[in-house]
Length: 254
Image (cartoon, rainbow, N blue to C red):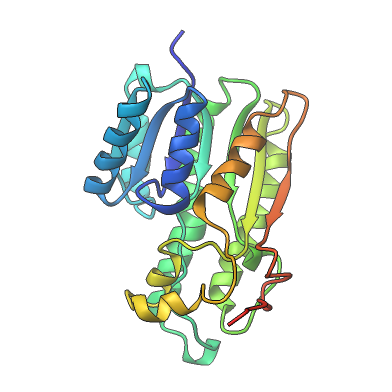
C-alpha cells in the first residue's frame, strides 16, 4: 500500500508551509495546494531536499467550486490514499466598521474562509471515509470564538468554521473521521499584509511590542493533534500568545 497522504491548502507560505514541513517529517506524502505555483514549487523542492516524500503541487483556488471538484474527481489513483486534510486556506480582507465595509472584501472572505473550506471538504471526504481514523483539521481563529471591533465579517466567517467543525465532527464520527479545529490568536505571517491590501508598514505595527505566535507554533499543534492514538481526538484548541489574553487585548511593552 502507498504511504499515507496529507493535503494542505494555503500551503505556499505561513502556517501552510510550516505544516507541510512537519507532515513531511512525519512521513506523509503531500498534496500541496495554493494559488501561487512558484512558491509551491519552491516549497516542494525544499522539502524533497530533506526528505524522501512524494509531493504533488496543485495551483488551485479553493474558491472555485468547479475547479476543486474536477481536480479531485480526476485525482490519479496513486494519490488517493488520503488520511489528512488541513483546511488552512483563509484570509482577512479589510478592517472597518460594518457600515463602512467593502463589499468586495466581504465576498473574498466568505468565498475563501467558508465556501473554500466547504468545497475542499466535500471533495476530499469520500477519500477520508475509506481510511478509518483519518483526520480533518480546520484552521479557525480566536475571531471564531470572540468578536472584536472592526472584525465583523471576518469574525463571522471564523465563527462559521467553528460551527462547521462541530457539525463535521458529529456527522463523520460513524466512519470514523476525526475533526479538529485549531483557533490561533495573533500569528505573524502574511495575514496582516493581506488584510491591509499589501501595506507592509501598516501590517508590521500589528506585531510590535509583544511576542506573537509564529507559523511553527501552529504547525506544532497540528503535529500533536494528528499523532494522537486512534481512540483520542482533540476536538478544539485555542492557541494564544501569552501577551494576548483574548481577541481584543494585547499587552505590549512598546
